[in-house]
Length: 320
Image (cartoon, rainbow, N blue to C red; front, side, top):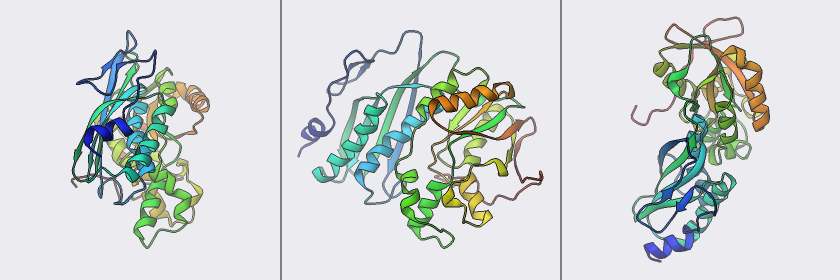
């Protein structure tokens, strides 16, 4: 199977009628028509075999995750998806791999009305690079630099299960439990698009990001961009049943420093507390207030008595 047959068989699809895609796969460029009066939101993520996913990963789940992690960036900005491109390096044009990969990719794309509009293929080590395009109303994007001292710090869903799945796959000695219980949290993350759009429409919600490299490491991006610090109430962190049998130190490491969660971490004025809960309920996602922002720089993790806890890990850094 040659390159162009590969594209035609697995990735060429007609652009949905009446949508923002004027011209999709098959020309030198795609043509998108955003809603008048909106801004474009654009994000790119790359997944490399052996770095972001295990060699031999199940291709249908990989197709899902490759798009999910990109859609999660749109969710963090409160944007609505318009389309995406896919650059795909493959060791070989393997039909048995491509068919389920495309199936997982397009199942998620169709669920969020986000068509594939172009890309590239080449031979090389398995690498997936996607760029997503979305739109958001001017002044409503949830930027990292918009937080203010006194804001409440909120979390969607819960963290830590993907980190436990990674530990179980690696056979790390502290990890306990069944991989099957937490595997989908690592392999098939859920982009919080409906919640992100609801938060962007909620007065008083200010800054947000998605959690890919650990809660504390990603929180630092908001704190540095906004010139603030934070206090986190450890007792307020939602804990999945799969994490409850871990010792406290490893449980906190999973909750605060584990990666691949793709939940939203966001700040809001205390006056918006009820509206934030309503936005979560409307989107079908639990949201939890886990702390507050303060003027003093840096973050603190506090126990139920207000004492500082020592956290060993900080989050993932590709070049650390």
